[in-house]
Length: 241
Image (cartoon, rainbow, N blue to C red):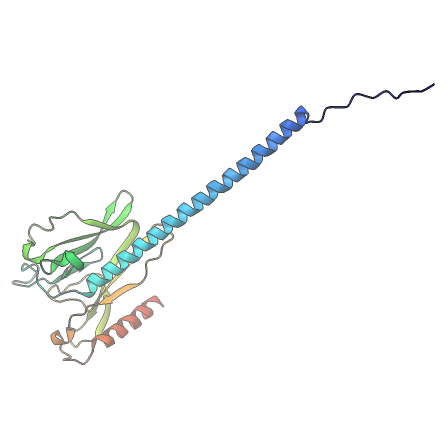
């Protein structure tokens, strides 16, 4: 007598409901992690791009100011100085300078221009403003007619300083107020302090005036331009020690 084996019903292959729920939950976690990583990378990229743009703007502003201060011209823009009939060629205080210099490129058409650099306080800190007007059209009783240009903003502060020398031509050091408005300073220094949330450093800006100062000093050529710059740098180092 032949015996036959009974075939047991085979279980259908597949996932249980619990396994599906766990798989979906795991996939959600992985997607969330991936999305968070992408957002962090995007924020880091944007932050890096902003810092590059800010650094580029600071560098261009630094170069522009250095160029303008390096080309000061002893041309009077005001005849009403503190002394009678005094020709004012330069005014300077810790927060403002005014001078005559050429403008770069096509902006220089029309000749030398009266220019101002000044710090102005606003709701978000200080801003460094620049303004200019043709010397031939400038009226000191009216002032600048153009709207100032914002070079830097959201600053903690800043100041101008001026290198002074005595009648014998000896350098006396830096001062925050320029007293002799009928003469140009030997050099001008500008320090800018950014706010704490801006990790930017302002490079040292101390530029000498390229005008031949030898013709206006009692030394008659005893101290050349290169000597002035070397003395200026050594004085800067000494003041920081």
